[in-house]
Length: 366
View 1: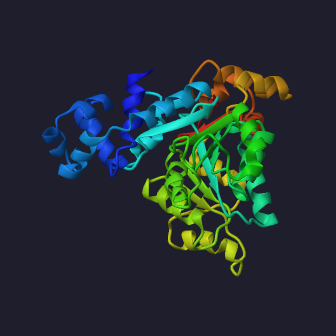
View 2: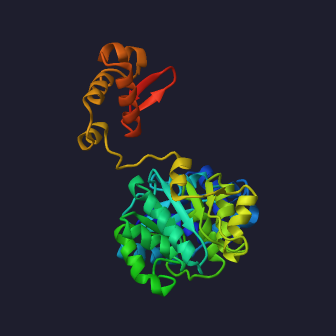
View 3: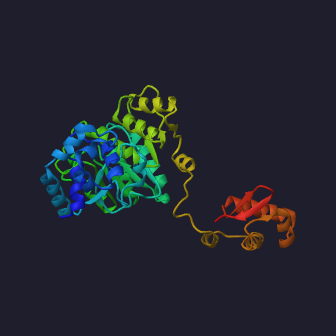
């Protein structure tokens, strides 16, 4: 049996030892095994540990539960992501209360270059559904990983829309991987394993108790670059996630709705408190995050599909030889009239083939 993993899981089983204290212990002792083998007095002097927690670590004997968890992990081909290991989601490392260990089953990279969490009410309106679908469809060309909580309502709409558009999607669970809650999402969860996956910090035997959900929400908030709140009441669970994302210095966006609609009251509040940016259209997210499309065709490819004039081809040919060129030099080299150059430049800019720079300079767009 993997001894490192045994001690890593056991660390999460020690009574009254939270993720913050576990992180401090790991910084001091390097690994989980060293923590269990350390002397009580050495444990007690670590910040936040003291005599009570040091005693709890030395008295811990429930390694059988950790062994059972490993058997389940191995049987079901589940990945373990320990906070001190290289495969741990890097964005979560910047969260002070990052989970000590995560259990993951899936086939996508949790350190994807672009990750968006989409959250909202379980009792969405048709408007909320439409907005969720429109945003995700807009994200399709950008190699974005969609994260949500596999709940009914906005969560499941986000997951389903992502799959429909061949976008990887991760469901963060508030229970162990031995079951799916709500049960009607079992088939959805199976689909997600083929393009995305399921993630949780809870062990196999953990049930979806109500106090697990706020704990789950911090992963939804911390693992992403941006969190989008579609619809939520002012006291909805999504408000907790949005607040966490804001405190983690993540970008938070909220969808404006009708001012008298309780399902929009939370979004309006976040916008009023300057804790979320008002998202007025799906494409705004791309602009705000300054993301480029993975499927943006290369210059040469674009030229193949665009019918260029003789003058435009001459200008492109000149620009290919230099990083950038002044309009006067372009005039001299091209031997075209000023009106022809002006018309050609305008068309090439409109087709996103060239861009203007300060000082009347122009260059090809990469």
